[in-house]
Amino acid sequence: MVLRSGLRPSFGSRNSGAPYLEPIYLSGGAEPLPELTEPFTLAKPVAIASRITEKTFRYRDFELGVLPLPGHSPGMVGYEMDGILVAGDAVITAEFRAKYPIPYLTDLGKYRASLTAIEGKAPLLVIPGHGFLLDPDKLRAELAGNRECLDGLERLVLEALSEPMTNQEVLARVATALGLEMKTVVHFVLDLTTVNAILTDLARRGLAVYRVEGNKLLWGRK
Image (cartoon, rainbow, N blue to C red; front, side, top):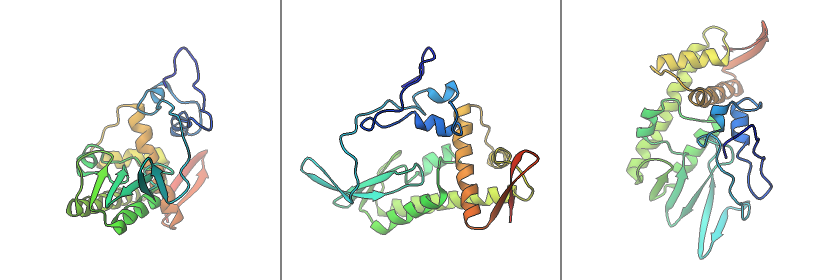
């Protein structure tokens, strides 16, 4: 739903979801800028028939396994049946890693765990959110590529933290190192979310520290 004429879309009822929360959290909890209320970051509400709380989900005559795959987005899950796993954006294929060198993540640690969970399931076929179907050999290559991408981003963030700086300054350093030029608000806030996810994960692991100084939240390498 797109904002028009100053009207604010509802957060949604318990049966319709709350898509307006995405542009709000991309705005740091504030009312979003107009660019963040377009369809790419503000989806239309959909009816929710029921909430999945078990490890299996029955749809008509089919029983699907439910595999938690958070990290790209909070609460994301995959569905599996007869060795086929619908993994969504828990597997970002090489084509899209090349197009978006800073893939969108909300939790780096959980995303790594989701890659391990997919690997442990050893599916016969994976359906990613974008790209082509993955057989076991292609899946192994894509999982390795995802981990290599994450390791590279983490390394660039740690290199940036050789001196204290804000999260936006870290993003600028990382983007420059990757040869990126962010030209839109949407591109900027999505990449900043990933940098925030990496910084938080580094702090959890004792590899980064943060403090408020000079009216700024500064990050540094421990």
